[in-house]
Image 1 (cartoon, helix red, strand yellow):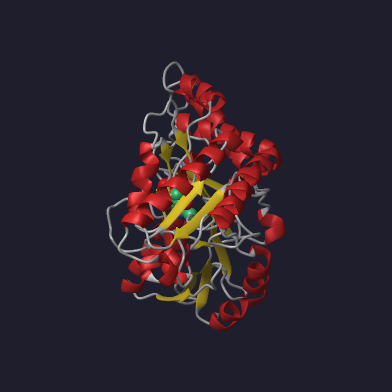
Image 2 (cartoon, rainbow, N blue to C red):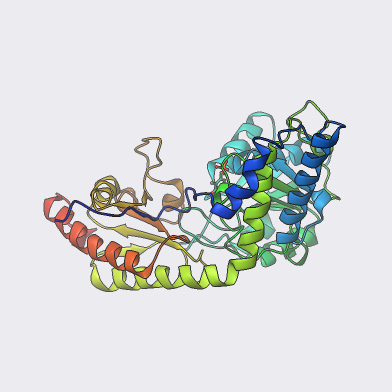
Length: 393
Ligand SMILES: *Cc1c(COP(=O)(O)O)cnc(C)c1O
């Protein structure tokens, strides 16, 4: 087996992306000569204020929101917290019931669990084998006390894109707020919050070639919410803290680039994705594709290889210079299989043999070929060594 490689192939863009050169160039002056505080009254403060407001416009435009409906946060997790808690606390007198689903990111699931301890009631909708919620189950779960429905736009593990416009038809009709964790979708899917009837949305810049530690919450101007981070009057008094101006500027540039290139980016990633999925399904026995085949993020591949351990697979891929993610355990070293794979009905031992590849801008067809060729070789070797019989799983 060839171990030495001249190149690292990064296929974990759902975990994070690098900062594009054009993005970094826009950010740099705000660390040095343009260091002012955006709240200060003098010239250098004003320059920073203008830079923040320009970025707010860029973010708003990308999702067809108004600039005043965008709040900068420290990332996707904070946006999820701010929106879910903020809406829950502000609307307590109307009701205490929240609906979400079982395959959400921990930033949503753990926030909902914490709210349960505070007296809120949460319904966790199940999903089908492709990761879709049931619209009937959603409709039947909404009651008089329901204040918020929070369903992710696209899943970070299996790539399934929910039918958001059908979901919002229901939430609008029932008069409850709809939030979506769109951290995986922004930059990958065209999103129009007006056309889709979304009331609140979370995004994070490092998933679309912007810096880490910066994100935004879109909250429709008519939505009642309570601030979570209290302090100064930044972000219209809704999110205190001196603005992270370099990161905000970077996020604005990154989302502008992403929105402008979304069609060509998707086309390229889909070719890599479909090539990879087709070849793995055709050339490796005892495999299962996870997530919907059609309504799926352009760069997302998630496959279970029966009879092998995802961790060993990752290690052997790493030795070949391929950096990917296991669909089975999270990076925390937890041995529990992914809650997402279990929710779509995989048995524990099958979930453990899962691999997530997420393609991005830096990948080529040559990479995809090398990945599939390597997988064919590695999976055969691991199966030879495995005590499990893939054909009996
Ligand atoms: C990455 C991710 C998050 C968390 O975003 P951070 O900016 O890392 O806090 C939340 N939801 C989804 C779906 C994600 O993929």
